[in-house]
Amino acid sequence: MTRSIAELAAVLAAALFIFALYWMNDPKTARNGVIAGVTGMTLAILATWIQPEIVHHGWVVLAIAAGFAVGVPLSRVPLTAVPQRTALSHAFGGLAAGLVGTAEYLLGVEAHPAELTAFRMSALVAEVILGFLTFTGSLMAAAKLQEVKWIPQRPVTYPGQNFVNIGVLVVAVALGALVAANPTASWSGTAFHAIVALSILFGVLLIIPIGGADMPTVISILNSYAGLSAVAMGFVLNSKLLVTAGALDGSSGLILSIIMCRAMNRSFTNVLFGAFGTVQKAVTTGEQKTWKQESVEGAAQLLEQASLVVIIPGYGMAVAQAQHKVRELYDQLTKRGVTVKFAIHPVAGRMPGHMNVLLAEADVPYTALVEMDEINPEMPQCDVAMVIGANDVVNPAARYVKGSPIYGMPIIDADKARTVLAIKRSKKPGFAGIDNELYVQDNTWMLFGDATAVLGDLVKQFGSGGLH
Amino acid sequence: MIDGLMASETAAAAPPVDYWSMLFVFVLATFIGLGVIRRVSRLLYTPLMSLTNAISAIAVVGSLVVAGADYPVTIRVLGAVALFASMTNIVSGFMITNRMLKMFKKQ
Image (cartoon, rainbow over all chains, first blue to last red; front, side):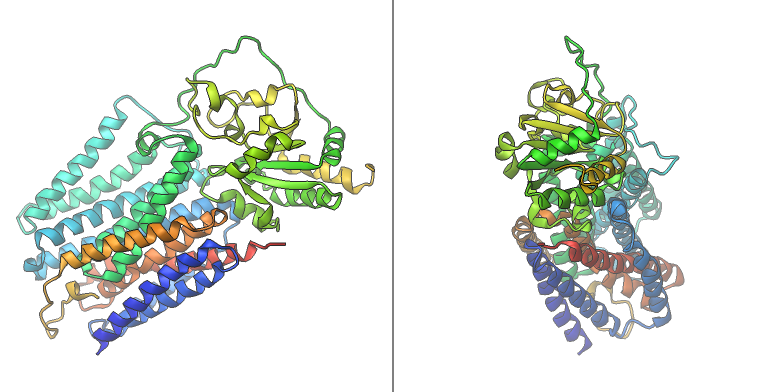
């Protein structure tokens, strides 16, 4: 009886999860998706809990309570910290898979060696390797995003790095194959622990050469791994619901990774093994152009006289927490009949969709947020392109400088606008360490300073009535 | 759903696991996933990631059995930590998704 309830709950939960993702196709229906997801999850948990083999209810209650105690504050982080939170949740997902896999192996060896068939053992080894590498890899990514002091932000590389990384993984997989073939041999326990240790090590090594600009791709790839480890767990536990949910998560991570890679014109292997941002060739331009600085008053005038303003936000906007000031500027301009659009590059920020969430938080209507491919044809009609804390995604060098690390990356055509206003924190080059010729174009005017402060001054210009 | 995990002596012997049907489910679910995710609004990629993260924390059902069944204490400790980790993802994943989605307004 309880078994049938569990099966029925699993089918319902799987269907609800698919609906949850389906409703994400439109911001209007998206919140139904959360309700569907929560319902499916609750059903699945309760149906498992009522099974007769669950006898230590105190343990379950305690662990669930601890999950709430940590989960609730984690859901209230400021939205600029969402990339870290996401990486951390991938780490938790990987950890759960790794631990359950380990427990299953220990149990199997002790009590049911006959159940450790080659197929089940292979799934188990895959679960453990994927789980633990996702765990430490995501922890490292979260630490880099949080800018934890003792973890270097810049990519760290050394000679033979890829050889070492791949070597560690190959040894882990080879040991896994041996253990899968001989799960109960006298040395298998030791080998199993070695697999765990190597996977934990591999996760760390994998993220060491990764830099901030690659984070949107890396987070997506780790998302995919977390999903796959859940699939492997489903195979081990013979749970179709787990396989389904893991496959949904895995395919979501896969699609996002592909979109992110395309948006940077790079391949998976290039992201994971390419160490973006370390190649800082001194680009020697024939003549050294300099930038022209604009006053806040002048910028305000330019904006007021425009009919179409396109704002291009980047990670700098997130760092400066400038999204609310951006909204105030948006309000001032739209009030004066200026059309304002936001051009969102797929890899702007530190995770997929990062800019959209920040601007939505500041109450910018989502109808004003426009994708790169849609906005680019409009750029020649744009009077003012306003770059806020973005750099590589508007660098025209991506079109033709073959040696540049960003060569071939699709960019937002800010340079085609009639005038460009760029707010920049410092006069240093951007993340990839490449000079941006957009800033020295004839029609570009720079506003140096913290984005929040500069935008605040700009909004004041409109508010004081000094402009008519 | 959790046949592979039967440990109690009273339970009937677990039926042999049909790996082919599991593989079948995996392939079909991946196709559904690819089809559904491709339609997700590009505006919502960040909440999508937190939502799929919460959903894949369905690993909670595996952790729950390992933590709550009559297994040796070391095993149950592993299970309890896994249950804690999955539960954290469920709670924070759904809550932050909801929080972000509330912010997307048309006007």
